[in-house]
Image (cartoon, rainbow, N blue to C red; front, side):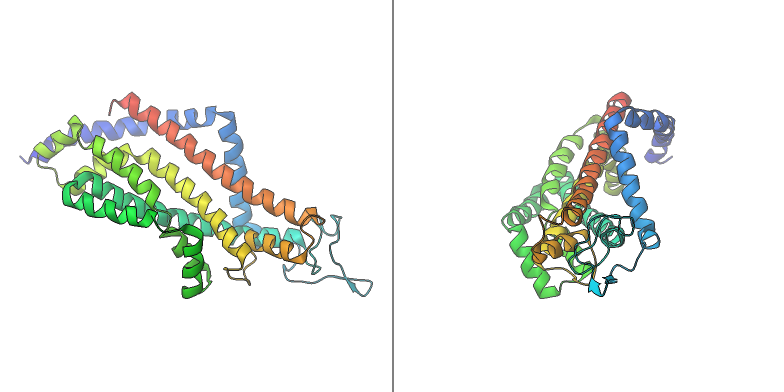
Length: 305
């Protein structure tokens, strides 16, 4: 009988335990009222991203004319609940349309960030030796690259498209979580259950997927949340500086247009709502990731590794 066959009862027990505690983990996650508030807020943002174009009352590029003149900087009213821009466009429509590209940018950017960081960090921590030295020196080099200036240069070189912006941000922000994952894997690989799996002849891929990654699952989710939030903030910054697709009405581009109009402080309905949408989205993502890490740490401690 293969030595790995002896591990099947242990795997079944572990899977049964994790499935049985899924309900208790969800209950623990929802016990924090603040987490529930941010969860509802994020679900609302996701809802807007999914159906925003259908909910938008007007075409986001439509210029409204009132009494033969452009309806510039109209305050909130029944016709325009969030007022109009300096070009006479409906703010609410542009806000709803901009939710989808903003959230999409954040999610894909977060996935790239945590994907690269996990690959490098886990590989360096698990194998150690020369592999660790090479990957960590590469990470040190990445830390020496300034974020915003490099992002501007790369965006200008590759073009200020939607996907190029996501890729540029993703390949620059993985460096922090790579180091954290490495330090965690260095500790996990010395634990008894990992050493026992090695003695039983388990492959490296098996050990990494069954013993290493589950133990850092909470941190992976946390760094995915952080990466998603940072991607939204940095993409908004790049849009504000003009290094973004100016035809895509993201929330960052809305702030840029408000600033360039010269009415950023006067047209509060234009800037405040957009800034609040970005802040609420990023804060909700951060808090949800932190809440999941707390629940994951509780599950791991109760299971006894």
